[in-house]
Image: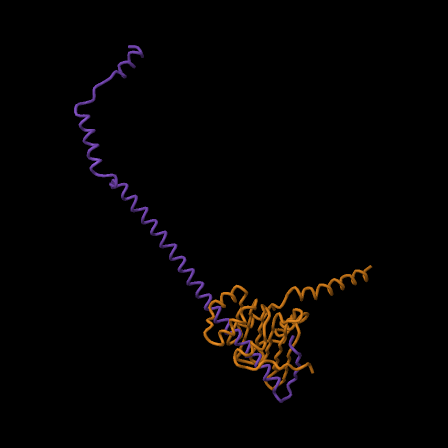
Length: 115
Length: 179
């Protein structure tokens, strides 16, 4: 048998098996009845997993930004407290200097006009 | 030759000193005092740079007069640094500790007030310096050395002494010419 014969035999038209057309039509009918929105269980689980990951990312981002906000809030409150303490100490020491200047004892005093 | 080189060296040192003092600006280096913290019974160490002052300004509510006054003062300041050490015994700090601060108060620093009294318990020293930027005050330094307390306040930026003193309803420094 030559190569030409083999090719001719392989490519010669053959009738489909019995019931092939019916099976194809039935399959088309069933997929149309299920509708375009339906998903196979595999696709659905992948979709759920993707949604879960997205939700986790959103929650993490929200938690991080809230944590940062809290940190800034604490830092700001601490800085405000420290400013109050620092200026109070400065004010008290100015008052102490004024008291020393006005004291009538042997304290040596020198004063110069502020610019 | 050696004399010539020595002269050049002296000139270089003399030229460098005021430039160095100016370059430092009104911010004092108070790191040498931190060693006192281990001996002190009470320590207040505050360091607020411009960023922290700005942040603090946002958190000082302007509801009462004191807060409004603080907010107004903060607007122009570039730094507030305070170190206070209180001790349980006399002589916990040395004259060198005081001098480490006083030594920096040269150049543009002008001493406004100096009071010194010697008592049985030891020396009491209160000095107030201002940093001059032209005709206005660009900084403030307060040094208080008592037998059991050492305080250094360093405020960087233009500050109104009267407003600062008024924060606690106290009188400011008398405007009296030098004796």
